[in-house]
Length: 111
Figure 1 (cartoon, rainbow, N blue to C red):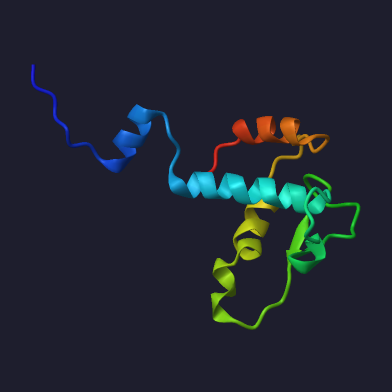
Figure 2 (figure 1 turned 135 degrees about the horizontal axis):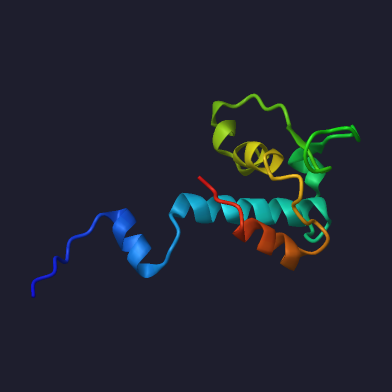
């Protein structure tokens, strides 16, 4: 029997049980954002984001806003590519521990 060695990238990733690079980057960004907001890193979240002060937001209570930047390249910076995805996390996302948060992320399909 003849099998082809040539597969598309998405077919190879599926055969190997891997996610796309974009999905892995989003997951890593979201986990880093979690660590920033809950003080699990030496960095301060205020340097990256503005946390919503409103208590009546739709969804989860950790809504973020962009910091205003003047550079065109700001759209590729970590905080600018993370805010939209972070704010779209479901209401029932568990923020009580990082392990529970990771499990919640596993249940969410990223792009």
